[in-house]
Length: 185
Image (cartoon, rainbow, N blue to C red; front, side, top):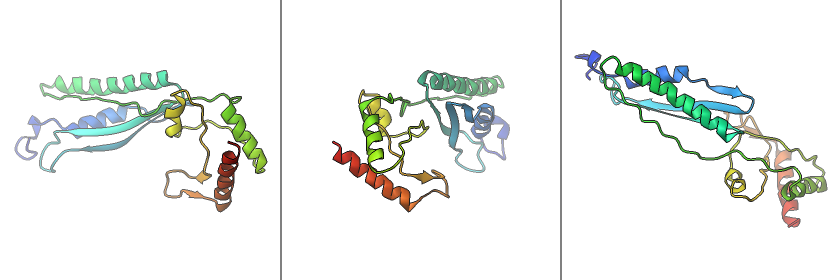
């Protein structure tokens, strides 16, 4: 619909998306779960009521079942926004899709791969530190296929920010650790 001639005949998809997004809880939802809407784009011209809008986000968590519950809750929020818009005799439509890119995993601290990591750390004089992370890697896929593995930190600080950096000392230690792990094989 033309924004000057008949804006009331259009459905502003960007406004509907914004309404839905405003109702979705984002950030750290629980100790072990986060949700983020990171991309939004829509419309085609400034003189046309926005006929479409797409947003993309992600849900991360240590428990797949909880992630799927939050996905369903998010979908229901957008469905409710669209149902309300349809009640105004307009033909709004929601296309909601998702894909599972990675699943969380846990590797037993007593597994061979963890023990090998700890021995390599001790050999180069580094205190082994085992930690959970919300990061995603190839290891998510590998472990979920039944092959234990660990992710080695590269020592990054302020990850994915404009202030990300790594100390040279951490880079050197990381290289020494990889060398020791290779020598142990």
